[in-house]
Image (tube, rainbow, N blue to C red):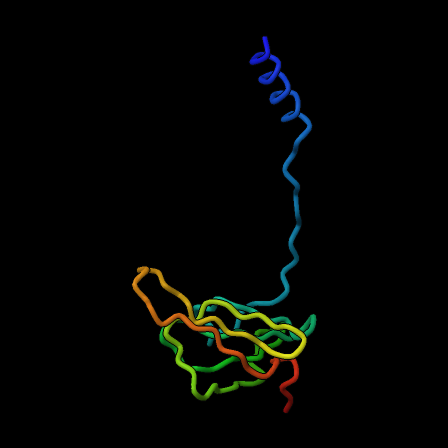
Length: 121
């Protein structure tokens, strides 16, 4: 009896649960230069920062909603073995070089740099 009650409650509760439906809005098309990007920092509603991962140049790219690259910033003393993520706090931007698809990397690192939103001209 208790098992039947549990099954009934599960079926009844599933009737009330529906998947939420979202309607995303296209913000921009990515620049042609960024063929394989793994991270994004939002500068504003119209400006963004990203990079190419896995063996590409040690560069960050600022681009706008039209897909135009506005600025390229070269990182010294950094290696792009497999950059996978980027995030910021109040003072810095952190870039994760920890892609490890084959699970054999031992040199996983996080770089701390000037906050991208503070880089000008």
